Every structure is written in structure tokens, then in C-alpha cells.
Length: 249
Image (cartoon, rainbow, N blue to C red; front, side, top):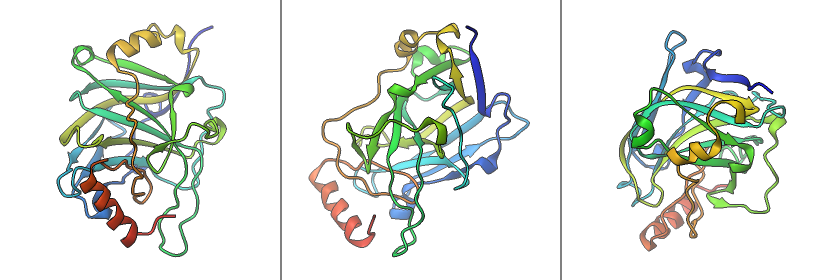
């Protein structure tokens, strides 16, 4: 069967700056900042910014998420998500999906935490030589997390009611920081991806398997997105302070 593709952002469905908004660690006192530069007249969007990890003692994140609390995508007829990438800086990025958004906590007005489904990837030097590289992520490769901890017993992603897409740059326990940039031609849902000309094994030759770490400290929920905090004792102290001053439901 032929590959069937539904463009969600870019490609046949033009990029729009109104579809995205920043969700960075600045609301917790951090100094990281992200941007998504895009235009309906340009084929490529640029996710970029600066990841600061010194202010929060080794932790930090910068992300862009889709806007609109009532938006929903029914992708149940598809096999996974495809990213069409042009170039990047060899840093590790995270694609995040959510199938549930809760109303704000009445006590503090913050969005309440729900399960996130994440996939970590790196656009390395070998693939950066190509004009465009398509990364297909099957649903089974998204790992469920809650407040930064992997949830092995979590339900599968509800593909008929996907509520949010996010692109994130995070420190991965202090492993990366500074300026970052990722150029994306499109984000799409794909069926029969094995017929696209590049199979998953070849993708993994360019993109390592998802990042994992045995120690995943509880993260501070920031507005609308999750972040993992460093497992060092200093950052554990910082986490205690955050949880005491900024209650998270």
C-alpha cells in the first residue's frame, strides 16, 4: 500500500506562528528562552533559543507547544508521527504529545499535570549533510512520563484525541546547554511509513534510540509542560524549594 500522509504543521498545511507559544523555565525563575520562527510563506520553521542551566543549578528547559485548549487531532488511522528535518546543531531534542489537558488548578491557576508521551532524538552530523531527513516515530516509541518519571503502567496514547504537540530542549541532567536551533519542514501523521523509502532501522542509524536515565527526579511542572530536574543533591534542594513555593497538582 502507498504511504498516506496528513500534514499537521508545514508541508501541505502551512506553518503559522499562531499555532505555537513558548513554555520555558522562566516561570520558575530560570532564564531559558525559546522561539519558533515560522511563516505561511516559508517552507521551514526554526525552533531555537537559549538553554540556561546555571540559574536553576543544572536544570533547565525551553519549549514550544501548540496553542488552544480545545484543539484535538484524531490520528487513530495513522502509524505514527514523521518529522521532516533540514538541519540542527547535534543537540538532543524531545517531541512531546498529550492526549489530556485538565483545567487550571483553582488554588493557584496553574495547569494541572497529565501524562506526557515523549520521544528524544538527535539530528547528528551524518544526517545534517542531507538536504532533508525524515524521522518516523511509531506510536510505540513514545514513552509515557508523569512529572518527569517514566510510567511503565501508563495507558497507551489515545491517538483519537491528541490535544497538544510540543518541541522541547532540556538539559538532560546538565548534559547540554546554550544556544540551540532545529529547522523543521513539517510535522505529519503517516500511515504505511515503511513504504516511504527510509525504514526505521535507517532512521536509527541517524537518530539514537530515546534518551533514558535510571534516576529520574520529580520535575517541576511549568505552566503547560514537564521538565526533569538534575539528580544531584544541589538540584534536589532546589526542587524542594520549588515544590514548597510553587505547589503543583
